[in-house]
Length: 452
Image (cartoon, rainbow, N blue to C red; front, side, top):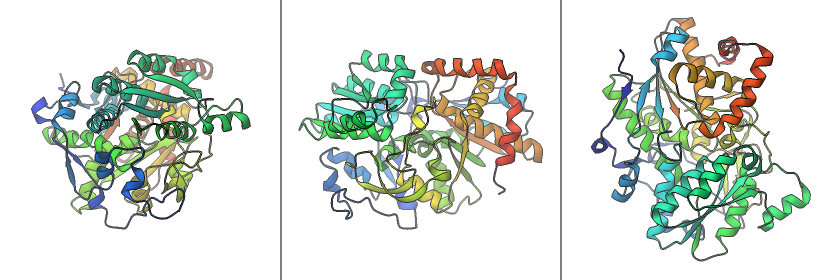
């Protein structure tokens, strides 16, 4: 029997987050103040973030200590397992070695807890009483509601309306932990009322939900805003994933040739990818490939433009230089709600523009084909967001079979799909009509891969 799990003890959990900024050698464009359009100062963020998180946003240090209280909270589910996907390899008959880091083992079911616990801790230390946020598919809202409950904070969540309707049990989970949950756009804010007046049946977007959350956060002195992706401090907190994975890959006697993660705003992609990407940036492994995978219906990196844009629909947030589809973009009603964001993290965008990372995009049909194949072989039902990374991993493994190369592939399984069974039901009904097996579509994806 193959020993497919590579585990770390609680004592082996990393004690620092990795900050990629000092390893980026080309200058990054600074955020701009939304009013003056001049470079934003740290003080410009004080209305929505506590000082500790602002310091992390601009930190010049390669590693940042994780507070003992946060590590204690992490220890409820961390370190998370690294798993060798032997059954998937066998089904594919590929010479590739496929590993995945499984982040769905905590109560909220995704990687989002890594930053939710940290943000709730720092806000509690600053005397904040309540956090307001947005959520797409509900993973972030779930994680923050649980983190706020742990630290005795109030929590208010604006959930993108299409996901609010598609995923009612995510809403239930947030309410279970005491959060107030609103479908966005709502009539509770000026930003929401403006959208509803123009588009009464708007399905919402993360950009709209962010506008609503920020608007409420700045109205009360005891309230701050919490963001689930995009900004530097959020990506920093997620690197606990990659720092663990480096230790686990070393235990397995392996090192990845290709690192893959889905990408909406960039947090789970950075969480796994940045810790390995530092070897490429420092010149010790220039052949490493790091791949961000996004929905074909919201192709921020693969079809967006690299330009300054707002992170929200109403223009409350600083302007950031990023790949964007435009802050008024309303994505299709895909089930991978966590990836329905118009922009990409400025750091991820900068790395893509510098050709240090790659990007791929797949359709909803393609990612559910991969998700079902993965569930059949590995026994885990993945979140639709995570299924994008699975699709890419399968495509690259199939390419290895065609070439005969035994590459090592590592991907981030950023969350489980137990709250997404309605999405799977819709897919399965479609597959019954189409009468096709999961592997029948893979070759089309292989043919679309860029030649490296």
